[in-house]
Image (cartoon, rainbow, N blue to C red; front, side):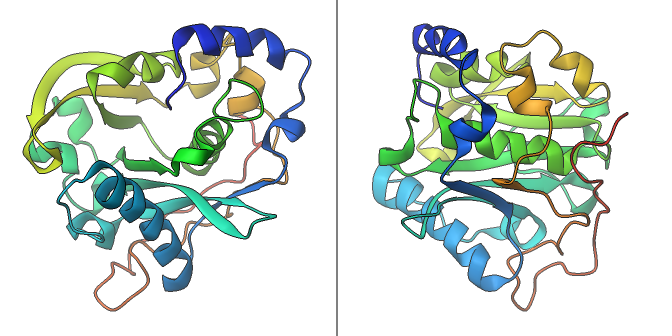
Amino acid sequence: MQATAEQVSRSESEHQDTSLGQLLKGYRFSVCEGPDVSARALEVRRQVYVNGIGYDVPVPDEYDRRSWFLLAEDVAAGKAVGSMRITPRFAGKLEAEEYFNLPTRLRSPRSFEISRFAILPEYRKGKTFLPTVSVGLFKLGIAFLRFRVDDLVICSKPERVWTYEWLRFERTGLVTRYAKLNNAQHELLVLDFRQILKTYGGHPFEELLVGPACPEVVVPRRAPALGIGVRGAVRELRLAVAPAGCSD
């Protein structure tokens, strides 16, 4: 997310008169199933991380073989515009563990990591100041993981920490530099999923993030196989995912 705190504050008041359907209208957010769709998500990452920022990282990398991918699409343009990776720890160590000694609580098989969050530059702002594609991907991620996850981990650059705090992630105070990402400083943050509805209670976008399902956000009843859908991907590990809108 690229918006400033002032812009988000302004968009909070705008949202009061703007329906969820209107905010996400024209987009489709889904969990990738199969190699062709996964390749589209990876191409967005390549454009942002390699062509845009200039990181010297492989796409795909070793973690992609045991992760899921979320994809944002501009429906009218028929274009992939955003992607996000979710890696479950039950399939192996998280990327964050290359750099951080995780607290015991986060070394659980019910811990998951969000990484390689990528949105094409022209789609980083929405119809209001709210970054629609970012929020749509997070809404999908929350619905996809709900009821099956204890803790969600993310590693953020300093200038974006406030964004994740706004999304109710908590700072751990653990900071280091990621050699593979141009030695940029990153901080470890955690979102507690155990009582996710209470976590977002009173949040300005509570309804948007954990409210009713909408047609733009497609949540599978059962998670696809892990991996990018080619030989060598982790196919045998699957996770049952309840549909969005279920109660605790």
